[in-house]
Length: 325
Image 1 (tube, helix red, strand yellow):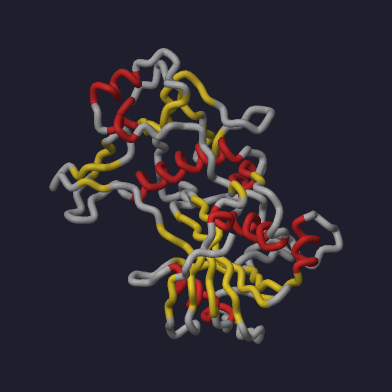
Image 2 (tube, rainbow, N blue to C red; image 1 turned 180 degrees about the vertical axis):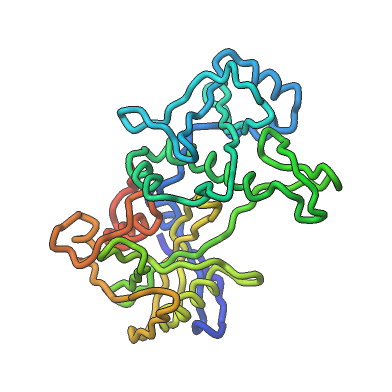
């Protein structure tokens, strides 16, 4: 299907950078952290009477955590326990309903040593979770982190308290309401013919390369951010940008906007303060890496990362819809 009319943007980092998308581009696969079976039940969050009934539901479920990471069954599924007996219902977040049964997670106690972001153990656990459980845990983890970082009011400095079933906080001093936010991030492949540009961070496992990425800045469009990041990190200028898909990334609360950008000049100017290295890879080299070839030129990003899905989409553009399971 032909792409829809693009949004054109001529700017400092790219020449006539155009954002396009098509229905087939938008949902070619199911990225990680998507597909939760829970109904988020937004209308019930501010209904005190309805919430009280959910808390008293005899089958109400509580997500079991080990610190900030989820407990898993031997099959790699989330562990749920009955909510009955939970002493502090004010510390609960309503994650949603499944077949009418409420599912909650308890706020965790944060400290200066608390791992608000991901740890090697977290990454190991994610590799075991299916996409639906991963999405449910991602929601829980992101909300827990948000509560831990918003204990005081950004307006007056007063202490805040959880409300709206854990989906907001209210200042005890000025009565201001605060709600969880997500930070948009562009993550992109620069494409030239049958090659794609990937980069790596020094902290990554040896040999791993992935899509370049960066936060959107105030007053910036998606295509402008893609062009800017590619120019800042690798010195290439985008001429057209097409949106592919998105993914929630709960460490702590990003929305990854995955794109592919065409570039005209393959010459690189790598910003060493941003990335350790960047290089061009052929389609066959990307396919070998994604297939787990021991002789592959690079180690791809993990399957639950949207960069993996984006690479798969680029490497096999005509394949039918797939999932991360």
